[in-house]
Figure (cartoon, rainbow, N blue to C red):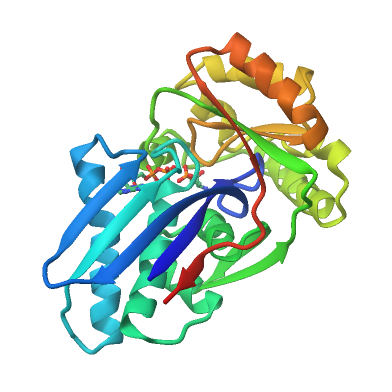
Length: 294
Ligand SMILES: Nc1ncnc2c1ncn2[C@@H]1O[C@H](COP(=O)(O)OP(=O)(O)O)[C@@H](O)[C@H]1O
Ligand SMILES: N[C@@H](CCOP(=O)(O)O)C(=O)O
């Protein structure tokens, strides 16, 4: 079995827990039936004993496999190739969840569709903004009704690039959610709500040049960026050098900059020169989402 799943950038500024898109930067997993359980891990996190064992993937995979096969137990060899930076706001945990559920269906020989994978993924990650593009690819608006995800996808054009600024330090999503207040003023809510709606309209109509207005918010970005104040300078530099929008990716620490392909190289060079301590990665956007092959 082969599973491939993209990185995602959630929130896109004002669309907290709602908007997200997929990036052409993929983790891949090969799974083979085997007499004994074994795991090999290459790439991101391979030097971290906790990540190396990939207990999150294995827990979800086995739980789902047992459900789908009425309790059957089986052993496999798992080969992980990790390219998505971990705990950097690029949806690494969603990628694990979505790929593990897809893998369990393939291993159990149970037919699935992407909606089923998405609704199952919601049981493991309770906000839909990363899991939806990880499953579907493209730009997605998602909302929850009970235990279901309702979402709408728009394909993204090949002339756009994600120029990612990936800090050397991690920010865990749990910690980054805990710095947010319990209450917001009406002004803060309207400021962000109006921009989330505007941003959706801009993505749906491919009106890229107004994104920088739509990408501002008062719900989470500044409060989180204060944990790593260099990010304010990253955002300003990106917007001054060709980024169409520059937002904290998910809960951080990565900064997501959207640019025309023609501008991306120059933008990446400026960011690399100004922020030598951070990794700059340029990737296309993804319209496919999770891929699973038996
Ligand atoms: N490739 C991976 N292998 C194993 N565990 C992973 C992997 N990617 C993510 N994880 C798990 O997810 C956690 C990171 O989740 P989170 O803080 O939500 O970060 P992110 O913003 O990258 O999704 C890690 O601490 C680890 O437990
Ligand atoms: N809406 C969530 C998104 C978290 O994304 P991640 O990539 O950091 O896991 C949030 O802002 O907390």
